[in-house]
Image (cartoon, rainbow, N blue to C red; front, side, top):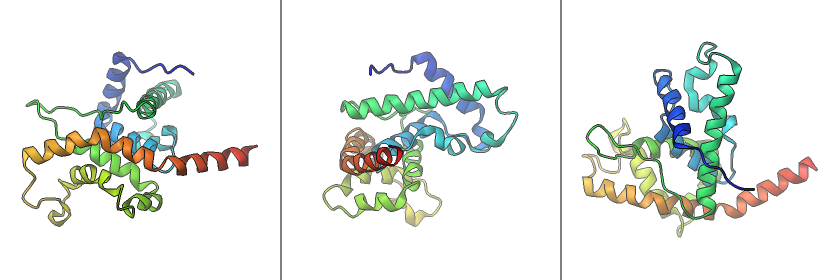
Length: 202
């Protein structure tokens, strides 16, 4: 089946909707990208429609957030489209994280990494398989370093006094190879789960 990626206009719509609900705890586009990357790279490819409450925050339960059900459906299709874009990138070894520059043109990556870590928490027990694998666990290092760099507890941060710009750039540069490596690590587990689901539905 041919993959049709979201257009630039689609992404603008998606970003605008997420920004509209920022005050209600919705993810921004960078967080969403990290979150969906974790869902796809991890032990089970969770569909994004099952995670809309996490993506939208309080707006999901707000009857006034969307003007009608079709508007919510259009939003869900945009999220699903981005999920498929990431899936296609991982399948073709062409993954790159969606990282947004701040007003000064600097890219930090914290939102992306925090989104990825949030996705990991949905199946934390299965992600432990990667933590316990000495050869493959290092793929998580740059992601978790960024995810915890602004943790409210200083002792949870990789550097109590803050990482240097050079160190942050190194972490950011490693994400593009880390996520595909994680995706490959969990490939057999995803295949087994998919086969079990297919067998149950037969």
